[in-house]
Length: 172
Image 1 (cartoon, rainbow, N blue to C red):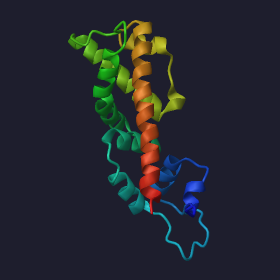
Image 2 (image 1 turned 30 degrees about the vertical axis):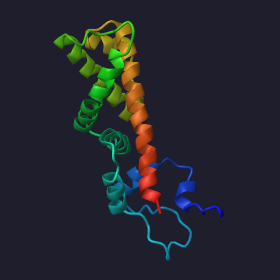
Image 3 (image 1 turned 90 degrees about the vertical axis):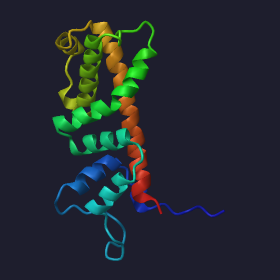
């Protein structure tokens, strides 16, 4: 079997989400390729098509929110989509940091998931867990456990979205 020659874009050391962000923003940026005059360049329509073909909604929203540095509304939408998976993860923790039978604890969980999504999109605006736990009216240890579970789920969705976007954009 002959090895298939890789597309020059897949050998690019930069992150595909960086390419997505640069292509979505209007400007004169061109993806560097060999023989630019003979090959069509990537455009925003290619990005939209690749994102449109992504199967998982959470992965799609995570990739778009991180690539475009999403607004608070996009972050809220991302946290709402991740909420059910975080609930399943929190129910699996022993001892349970929150009693999800209580409405107040479910609301606290929503706050923690939003904080984790905000930190995923804006890592430079990371705040201390003690301050966030105080704002959510939770114990710090409980907040940290739930935040770690939410961060793991969101980071997993982002990584899967990154690979799915790369596969959809550069597939033959």
